[in-house]
Image (cartoon, rainbow, N blue to C red; front, side, top):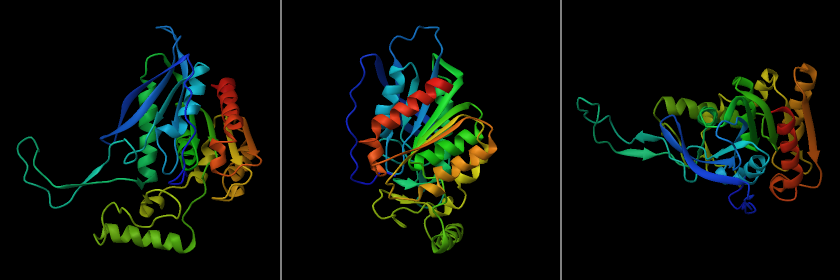
Length: 304
């Protein structure tokens, strides 16, 4: 969950990798995305692919150094920005009544654009759409698609890997998996859902319920439908989880630590859990980058 002030180190693009901008369509919204490709891929060559998920307040640039590193090792990689964030498009809401429509169901309406709202249900669909996109990319082997995610996006990657059999390998770092709604906050979220359904507040609330230090605001009513840790038992693919030894945003034992225990007990696929000492949550992108990215690359190389 990057803070408003987080600025990631700049990418030094490997000379063997090319990047191109693309649009991924999801729920009628154009998501801003970049594809990283090895330059030496032959026309008929099939390569593995990785879809990367940023976290709360991030963008496609959060994972660019990881994507470039994977591409330099022969993997086609896709980074995208979730709906309503950075340069991605947004869903829109009618600001009034339905306008008069012609025979083509077209009319003029006043709309409200949804920006910087964290909606985990929409994010799940956005991620699945990104997998749809990469599956159709030339040179991609549809039987070798991996998922990578960081922070809140790590939970999104876990959920999708557990429910999309196209994903064959999973690697996440500093992943937020446990429900954020507990105690009074859960009660408050249920009231938000009631108020939305009854028209007492905007159908997609914006600018309310902010979490201190984090960009944007959550749609708490939608968080009632999302629990990544409950999906872990469905995982049947090799799974790597990395945590920060000085994690300050959540208790790692309740998140990837708990997921590791579940997967070890299930024994259905290889699992590895590593805590990187001496770094905090954001340190995974700085002092912990080499360790984390090397571990993910090794995992994808071995199993993808």
